[in-house]
Image 1 (cartoon, rainbow, N blue to C red):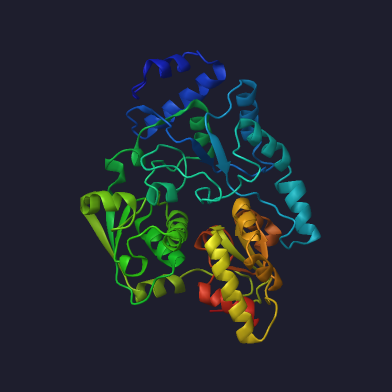
Image 2 (cartoon, helix red, strand yellow; image 1 turned 90 degrees about the vertical axis):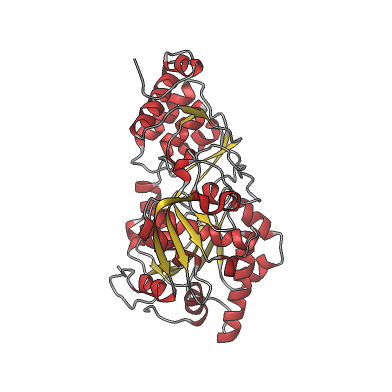
Length: 426
């Protein structure tokens, strides 16, 4: 059979069954997937590690578990060690008996079995459940130019190369060791379709700015100018944390797989405005534009002024520095209000390895004393429970706002609500 994608002799041999029928089907699936997007060839995955977005043992994902079993039966573990997205459940996170029943019997009833499959396929470690796999504490950080299946942060801040594939396509690429070359794996595909000019008078909230850009450019590549006023030109912990939250919002409120920040992200430093296409459009963002975007977010709570029952922070997972900074903020907020504990049940989420590192600092006991819970959970998966969906949950995550009924507030507004017992409403 002839394929439009150029194949090496080794790749053709796999298609013809040199490594068994199962891997032949995996290779054919990847080749056909690449053809749909105009791929020119199959290129080897060069990163030592990978990241999969499949971590949830949903009862409805029967075909996924069957595929995993076939891969294991074929003796085809991943060619790379990998991390996966966060676990959907954590007993530390508040829930009632009915919620627990839905979680364990009707939603994530296959969780333990699925985690065992992931372990056999090549899971990096028992702690490898996080959406921020690139944190130093986790140890899954690809290098510049490396090809992998990953997230917007790897593409943008690290300069690695990956497309926004489905979890199963990512898994297949990891198993076979090749991915089709198209889109963000090509030089042309990484050029910017938009120039985004930041003309704010104050530092824009990362989640809000990312949301505005994502909704405007959708799946295109933006080249952002004007952020250096607040972020400078060094990829330090503070800046990388900002870009983590910014990127998650661009990807969830739109479909951005790559962004460039002028003078800051690797390719923008290397190539500058050569990355901008000649016909690029311009989007100007000032304080008024961000306020407009914020005010137009829909509030889907049944009772608009309901008192919040839960607060989630950390979607994507928080960094070690964020946990420390928020410990200081919560303590200061409580001191200001004359309270000793947060007034809204509050959960800070982070990667297991980050939480382990945090637990070794003096901040851990201080945060625990405020009543804040730390967890490795995925807030999105918690909110997918129909009973959780009905709860008035607040967050400063635009990703969580987009995919669930959680209501977005800025960081300052969140801090005020959880430390001063204020009711909902903007």
